[in-house]
Amino acid sequence: MGWTQSYAPDQPQVRCLICDAPNATDVVVCSECAAPMALVHDAIAQGRAPQIISVLGESNVGKTVYLGFLLDMLSQRAKEFEAIPKGAYSVDLQQNVVSSMTSRCFPEKTAMEPDRWHWAYYQARKAGGRKSKWYDLVMPDMAGESLAAEIANPATYRVIRSLLSRSAGSLLLVDAALAANGASRPDFFALKMMSYIDSLFQGKRDQKVQTPVAVVLCKADHCPESFDDTSRFVQGNLSRLWNLCESRFQTVEYFACSAVGSLAYATGRDEDGVDYVRPIPLHTSLQGILEPFEWLISKI
Amino acid sequence: MADLENLIASLPSTLEAPIECDRAIFTSLPSPTGEGYRLVSWSAGVRSEERVELTRRAPSHDSILDETRHGRATMVTRLASSGRVMVLLARHAGEEHTRRGGSRVWSDILLLTAADYARIGSHPFPLGEALAHEPIPKIAARGSSVGLGRMLLSNRLPAYVPALCDSVPAERVAGMAASLVSGRETVAAAGPNCAALVASALAMLPSCLRGHVDFAAGLRVSRARQVRTTVVERLDLDVQRATRGQRIECLDEAELSVGLAPAWAPWLRLMARWWGTGRTELASRLADRLSAGWDQGAVARLVGLCDAIDRQEEAPDALVSFLMRRAAA
Image 1: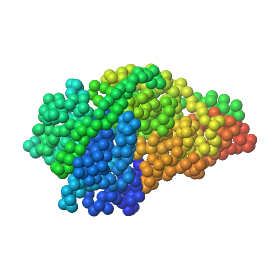
Image 2: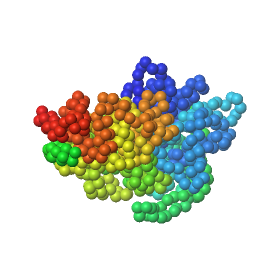
Image 3: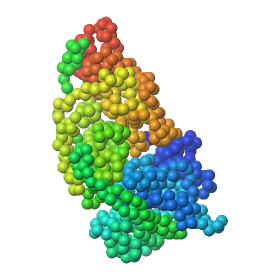
Image 4: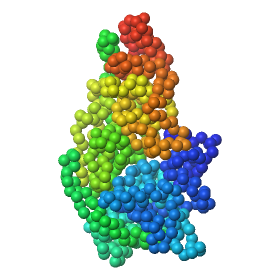
């Protein structure tokens, strides 16, 4: 079959959970979108289809750090959440993030190629005895550049389109520090991202998109006022995003979060003689990581 | 045999007029409107659908297997959107600009028609050499992209002289060449400096055959490349994970042999023999001569003639006469 040939219909097949492409039963990653086929096998074992939560944001906003810490908090029963990773591959991301931050460095940039993304499949529920509902959640850590490329030219990455079309909810991460300093780039990216989501559902003008979206202001330690009144902060500093959310989305909530307690900057000169400044996270201080997820779960 | 080399070298060149090709650069740079890996610059002839495909297939962060600052990778393939040949030359270009670790991957991309690629011998080496002499594009670290001009390839492109002839057994180079033309989707392990091994293997193939080869050498295995042959340093867990169940052949170094392409085995054995006996330049020049119009049958007859010359049953002039008759026909 390979990567450049079409699938042979006479072979036993399993359909990918994300893109629905047929695959042989023994493949590890989908031949079409590179999603782990373990998602399918685990979903079959559970007897129910998982719900996809997309973590979106531009490059360098902090998606990997946010998702890694979120998963780590869930697996440690933060805020009475009980969460179980389905498959060892689901733990790779949080291990990568925690070990990097422990070493006082940010995790490396996520590669654009979908087969190099981290995928997490978790079962989670809020503690409440036997009556509390279990959620099967699939959360891929996508590269910001891939999202940007897909927004600019839809169908560049079909896996992103498939993911967002099937998402039960989305976490849109926005760089609050840049926005607070007057940069318009976070606002424009968020506007494009939400427009893209809006276009996927192609509702009538008076029909709003029903998929819940949590807008998460990252790096909010740079602008503590965003914790006090997040909605007002968004309205003032991300007005384009605010207006689109109010007009086209039924279920939107705004949150502020921070992962880094204090940041230092190392300066030096690299091998090519170029001066550089490297941010160093001195310690982590998690604020507002779980709340967006908690809200999203309640809306699914 | 030096006479034979001189005779072959004296045959007229097929590259008469300069060739223009389009260029693009894919790397990670910050700008007012965005940052991260994307096409930062391209010449006017690069079409929008080509740019979409280049974005999808080009290597991004941490894609070059050789993590030293001298690490290189090469990828040659046909674009599905336009049919043009893409020659991608990737290298490390300093540290990734957000300083999160790892080097920035800089990919110079050249686009040319299949006919133009055939005119330069269907080998990426001349393009790499020509690119090295181009002025570095003025793309400011924090500025917007600057449009690239098209690149002009002169009619005096340097011929490729294989560099691995002394350090790598000729049979292994021939085996790599066989894997490139086997027709099967393959991931082949070639040890360190795999991009150089592939360059040498290409030099062994007849020029008419090189144009059908698409490969990625020195890059991490990824289905995003959409190439038939991926050449890596070793078959590690990443390779196993990416290829399991995909009906992709994985070959380690010991499994590279001319038997992978039985139809071309006689030619590759001839090339391996000439390489092993110090006639590397002769072999390369002869392979370069076999451009359009040479089919498997004609190459087989040529191999028979070369074998006869080596056994001293025929004079070296017979080969030149054979080549000149083919060229005239």
